[in-house]
Length: 308
Image (cartoon, rainbow, N blue to C red; front, top):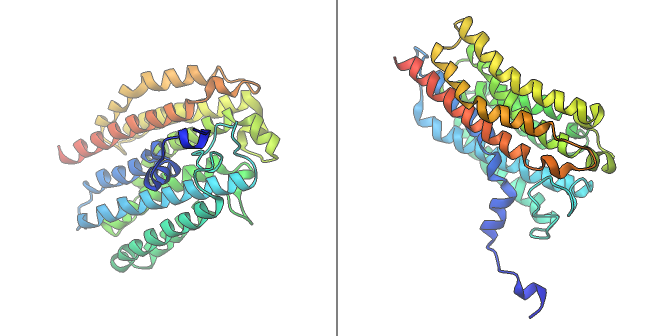
């Protein structure tokens, strides 16, 4: 029995599920649910039946962005079999680069067709928001932009998965824009950006070897730790500010129940060492867990404030 026959076979569905990186989905799903919770306070008519469509579109766009990121990182040799980034379906030869590239476009096409339902009911502003999300996700890595490789990844992830997704989801449900939605996107976007910052801080050595620039690789390990810590702290401080300014109900202080997870992650990132990235290999995953816990508490508290 050779090595290949000894390996258990895996279904294509299982491999594509790995490529989509399910651990990262709360980054988009939380934003949609936050928008839904905010919409509860809107006095005008709401189209709740559009909510599942918004949720599915967000999930599909996020999946496509993850697979496209894998493809372009693989082609630029950012992800290799000894690095920590990506889903590892390409570095592990589970999918070919061509399969990943075409598959990501198919996912985008399905999401865009479904998104036309939202455009039909909400008009051109919805189309504009959708196009910004589509192009922002694709050109995260794709030429001729590839802004991820020039230090703009953290900012754009904050804007796309935080501000744009919350504002766009709120508009889909209510047909209006809201400054409250923009403000509430700050803590959510900060924690989403922190997931990427943890990833980039860990990968400083490998990203530098690959010849790409992230904010963290330009600042160095100490700078990366400061960026990550600032994003985590900003999420909690922004909640305090919004409660004091009565932008959100006092119930939202319940997000501080997630603080022990945040403190654990802040301690973990301080172990970062450029030559030993394995020391913080999973901080991006544990930061995603923090974001999910924080986001769930935020959604519940905003909903309680709207209903009480």
